[in-house]
Length: 311
Image (cartoon, rainbow, N blue to C red; front, side, top):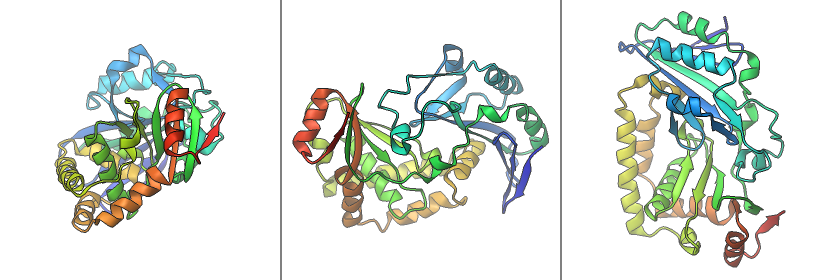
């Protein structure tokens, strides 16, 4: 059937296809959640739109995963190759392809599938259901999880105006200051795509306004104070997530222990403005990758004349 790992409070079955089934051994509520990480150059087919909730940049959760009928429908459509379609791999907004410089569009749309289960849900039954998914359905890209932040200012011509980079890992000392920086940018009115579940993850900051200078203004004390409060409230919400099977998926995908959110809360108490500015510089000032129209690129070059423009 697959490899079974017994961990402190939960077990994990890894099927030959790469599907991961994680079960909490202590939680009594019966729940099932299914999470999928998909390649950025993939879009959902119309028949798949109603099946998923989107979280962040490239992560999906199967709706009503507790329903056996829904689980079977998902597996059936996946086997029929009826859920996803590839976009033109030449589009420059595929940050993963640009970062690794080797994604040519010849891989599966799905990077991973993780199933979280709790209570008296039978993991053997779930494993049998998902075992019919072939190896070819999941790319299992190990390089994806070793992505490092890009240093230097790199610009590509594309169809969307954005600034982007790769996030730090959730265990890094930079991670909480990084989340705070993203929150400050959200408060300034920028739309951001980012998936906590698959960190280290690409993040994209979309630019709608012609004047991009406000993107690079370093955070002020009042902005930091407001952002800290918002991040604290977000962590509290995550800790109180009623669907613990989704929490299991998060814990598994970000590779940290069950107390990760409490550790983040402790780190928040000791964040300094100096730390925030260092992270701000590393991800936005000293390193970014961008894609956009000719007008947008001209605007970027006015701010960073030393930026490398790649045709």
